Length: 243
Image (cartoon, rainbow, N blue to C red; front, side):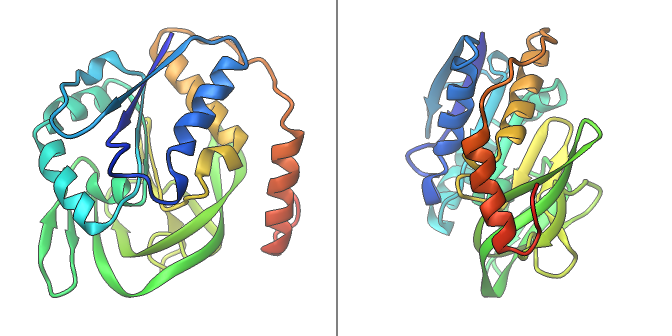
């Protein structure tokens, strides 16, 4: 059985981010893979070692401030689980929280968890629009699509990007990187939500979660023709051809 933890669903759910958890769960159930989802919010008890997949969505600066303090109390346990192979997907504000700090307008520095070597600073314009990113999963290149809407500009240190920007802005609109990746932690600015739009990425995360359970089974193929057609339409709109 795969155990999923949805962190702060009542506070971090911009642009339908909870759809990532729905897609993950459904693609498990369609394959008869048992899966449970627990929602955890401010002050709730949690043991990260019990979970295989954790999702952290996006929110406004106000919500991020509330969550940063709560999540800081869980930092050591969270980091230990990450080092042990916990699969994590963090989107937008959740992504920023995993870094060292966020430099707000006016120069105020908001501390992050410091789990990833990156920082974010407020930009003077919003980076908005459909985007496409080339990512590498198990040696295979995949075009991932989504929608970004952020004013924060993220800069990576000694951590790999999630992918290379093919269309859109990515982390900061300057260096061509999008998101971040460390072990089984995947960070991105792409909403949409991300996983329903990218079945291949969803299945990759499911496979990683199964491996954490000691199961290396091959996933039963699903009929993804509808999802693939939708992705092809967006890639064509962005001038990138088919997947």
